[in-house]
Image (cartoon, rainbow, N blue to C red; front, side, top):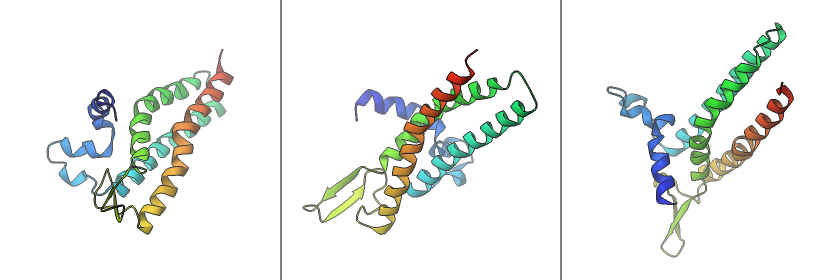
Length: 150
C-alpha cells in the first residue's frame, strides 16, 4: 500500500470502531478480532443508510419540500465513512503465506488462519459487502440524486 494512502487512512481511524479505544476510559469499547471489526463496520454503515433513507421517505411522504436535504446529508456523511469501511472490507482479502504456503494468516489480524472455515465465510461476507458498498452505494447516490436534481 502506498505510504501516503496509509497515512491518510491512519488519520481517519476515528471513523472506524478501532478508534474508540483512544478515548480515555473507553478501552472496553475496543473490538477484538478482525471478524468483529468487519461485521461491526459494515453493519453500522448499513444501519446508517437504512435509518437515513427511512427518515427521508417519511419526510417525502409528509410532503416536506426539503426532504432531499436528508439525502444530501447522507451522501456527505457516507463520503467520510465509505473509505474506512471499504478499507476494512478489502483487508479481508490480504493474506501472508509462510513455510512454502503451508501457513497463511490474515495481514490485518494474524490470529485468523486463511485456510480456516471462518476465513472462508469472512471472504464470502466481505465479497457481498464489497459489491454493496464501494460499488452499490455510490451508484445508488448517483441515480437518486440525479432524479432529485432541481
